[in-house]
Every structure is written in structure tokens, then in C-alpha cells.
Amino acid sequence: MSEIRQPHNNFFIKTFSNISNTSDFIKGVLPAEIVRKLDLSSSVIEPAGFVDDSLSSHLSDFVIKMKTKNGKKDVDIYLLFEHKSYMDENILWQLLKYQYLMLEEDYKAKRKFRVIIPIVFYHGHGKWNVKGSFCESISVPQYLRKYALNFEYIFYDTKDFHLSQSDSFGRNAFLMSALSLLKEHGRMNTEKFRTLVKYIKNSGLAKDEDSIFVLLNYYAMTNEVAQKDVADIIRSELGEEAEEIMPSLGRKIYNEGREEGAFAKAVETCRNLLVAGLNIDLISKATDLPVEKVLEIQKTLQN
Image 1 (cartoon, rainbow, N blue to C red):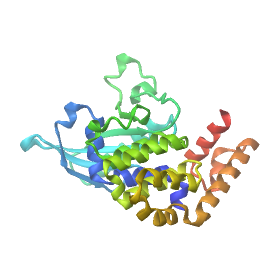
Image 2: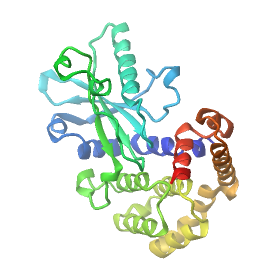
Image 3: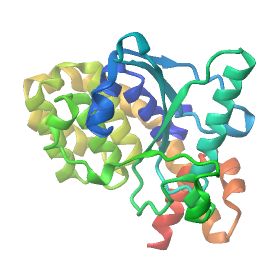
Image 4: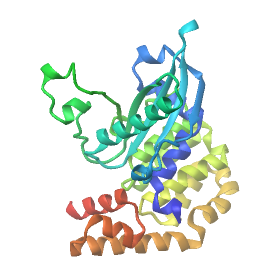
């Protein structure tokens, strides 16, 4: 059930724990002057051992380590990814804690402090209204910022993404498909889904059954869709390739309807408790849904 309880986090991790996907994303999002200085071939995923108990619920956070291309003065750069499917006003505080814990590791190990660049990946449907720097968030006057603790984060909003942007992401078909699904989670209708399946077909990704499963599994988990509608679109757009993969995909994604039914029941219970006015944290514990999912459901009730 963990995959259903945290579909966004699980899908985010599966996508960006692949170094090829992460490298193509970095090239498309970071400023060009920084990308030119990075040795992307040196990229490795660092274990997030610095996450303490107070941050343990943020399962999607991870760190990518890579070197710069400065000859004898190579520098290890640590890209700290934080994924959000809703606007979180505490993001700068969380990023500060993450960075402190990482630097504390360096201090205890008596090694040179690492260089950390925070990256916030946002795929919520609302506007992101959080300040871009720590000093701004705590209203430090401009004339004092030179002396105050401060940092900024690189921000990426999937609302700026479109499937036509393939040149920006190294023509990485899986990454492009994943970004499209993250952008449209909860509202990808059959027309949009058909467009995505056509892209998957034209890109050649349809031949990779494992990748197709990951993508369609996330689609099924985050959108209210009927299995028949999904199957009909896949068969009509993928043709013969669909006949080879549909039986196994159907079993994997829908799992005879058992897990989907449990998730739907939890969502319905969540809606009822929200209407009744219960506390968000209590609802999360009662339904076994992550807080971010409860907040998403709350927003649908407000529309």
C-alpha cells in the first residue's frame, strides 16, 4: 500500500533516481553558466542519511553529487532536491535544516564543507507564492542582508512544461512523459492521455514495458479513470505493441481492483472528515493518506 499512499513521492523517486533522467533534467533547468561547469558524467546519488526524525516524512528528498570541470580545482557539488505537490510555506526552513544537517556531517568528520545547491521541484496546481531566498522569507531588510544568514533555491514549476520542449531535456522520452504526468496529475483527461500515449509511441518508448508500467501506474493512481478507457486508448494508439503488453500491464496497474478500491475508500473517508472539520494531521493518520494528499483533496472541496 505504500506506493498508493504516496504516489507522487514514489513516482518522483523512480524518475529521478535514474542518473540519465536527472542529468537531462539538470541540463534543462539549471542556468547554462552552471551547467557548463558541471561534470555530469560524475553524477552519483547520495544516500539521504542526513534526514532526521523531524524530516522523515519527506521521503522524496535526495541528493545528487557531482564534480565541476575546473581541472586541478575540481569542486564537489551537492544538488539537494525537494519535491512538492502543494505550496509549502515552510520550504525554506526545511531546506535550511537539510543543509545544516549535511554540513554538520562534514564538521563531525573534520572534512571540508561541501557546496550545496537546493532545487525545489513543484507540480502543484496552485500558484507558488513562497519567497525565493531565506532572508526574504523572514523579512530581513535589504541593508542587513549582507550580514545575515541567507541562501536561495533553484525553482522548477511543471506548469512551465510542455511536450514540445524535448530539446531542453535531451530528448529523454521517459523524463518528458514523467514531467507531463506530474504536471497534469489529478486532471489528465482522456484527450490529454491520448496525446501522451501518441508521444510515447512516436518516441519509441512504447517498446520498453518496464517504463510504460511506471508511467501508466502513476497515471492510474493519480487520475480518476476507468480501466477500459485506458486500455482502449492504449490499444488504438499503440496498435500491435499494445497487444503484447496490455495483459501484464492490466494485472500490474489495477491488481484486480483491490488496491485501487482501498485507495478510493480512503479518499472518500478523507472527504467526509474534511467536511466534518477534523484536523489535517488527524485525517492523515485516520486514513493512512499522506498530508499532501489530504491537502489536495481539501482543495477540490473548495473549488
